[in-house]
Amino acid sequence: MEDSKKMDRISNLPDELLCHILSFLPTKIAFTTTVLSKRWTPLFHSLTILRFDDETVHNYAAFNSVCGFIDTFMLPPRLPNQFIKTFSLKCRFVFSDSNCHILDAWVEAAKQRCIEEFHLSMIARISNDTIFTCQTLVVLKLEWLQVEVENLCRDLPSLKTLQLRFVRFKNKNVLQQLLNASPNLEDLNAYGTSKHDKNSAPVGVKSLSLAKLVRAEMRAIDVPYNVVNNVEFLCWRSSSSKEWKWPNSVLECVSSHLRSCTILNFEGSANNLRFATYILQNARLLQDMTIDVTTRSSNEMLLERSEIIEELSSCPRISPACKLTFEYK
Image (tube, rainbow, N blue to C red):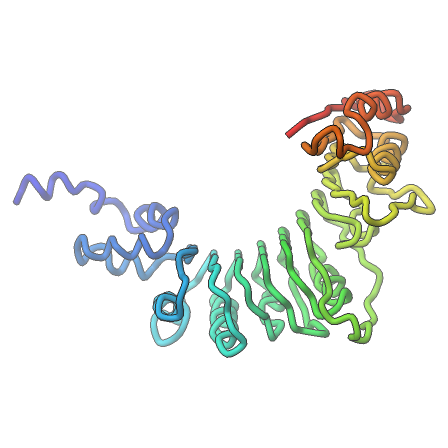
């Protein structure tokens, strides 16, 4: 017995360090440490980083089990005042309308416990704006969600990172309201956002101004140009399905701030070439520009790879330090 106690050195580590170690595990796996000894049970319930990334749920029985497990952490009476730094949930099981109140309850509980990072990757509807009024939120990542709120009562003064992947909004103004509510936003990643109610009336919003934005990855159809006035890194996904036109005046973010630019899925379309040329001719501080040429067969390419290289390599660059790189993935 004495030898076994000497071997269990990890249990003698400080609580703070043990909780830090457990925070790197999915919460479901961290729960299994409670069978080791009574020493681990209070540590498990003191975790401030909760990751429920269970993508194996395929039926209601398993879904209800997962929901009950999350309830033990998020809902009273168990440790209702405990601080939570990160809440992450990935679930491929579809939340029906009758289940969405569960998600709303978790979001409200996270807000009350001063959440800093919130990650949701799931097919579900958000019916209220609670997560968009969390003053402590620093990182917000949403994926595959449908936001049913038509007019946000929003306030995200601490938000620095916003990632939206295939998120559908009630109307496009809701996205603009969300950006307006984030004056300290530094990192924006928006791809595949859209509105799902074409008949909804537009809601007035003030002009967008994200003065602290440093990094942006997006498409023109997702986010308007004027939100990227100060970015230093811009990853712009051009689309050949809609004509891209030069802005009436050179954007300040391009002329005075842009240092790195990546164009993905470059296929040699007129839009691709027009946008790349615009950047090369107007980005005074540009240091590197990467052209990610699409992997489609040469028979489907609008221009041969050699033609793309020749066209852009011969384009005048306003920045003498600009390095042009072509990648084929």
